[in-house]
Length: 98
Image (tube, rainbow, N blue to C red; front, side, top):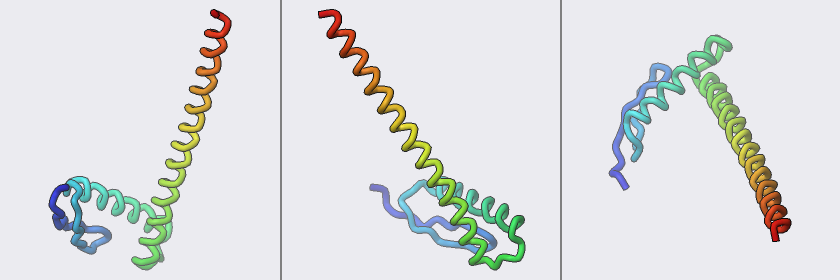
């Protein structure tokens, strides 16, 4: 395992030291994503305080994550069902060939 490093990131005007084993560029990319989402949320709710804005942003990101996870699960289930149907068809074809 790589040695943990401290990566300094800035989100919404605040600097945060992040102790991580992840690639520093990746952590900075994550912070930039959160920064962009906070800017978007602040345009739709300009009167929010910083904590409220952070919570709104976290909820939006979490919603996006849950939807993506659900879509992936649904796709996985569909793929499994299709594979099982193909397996059944192959079994039937082999049974007919006997």
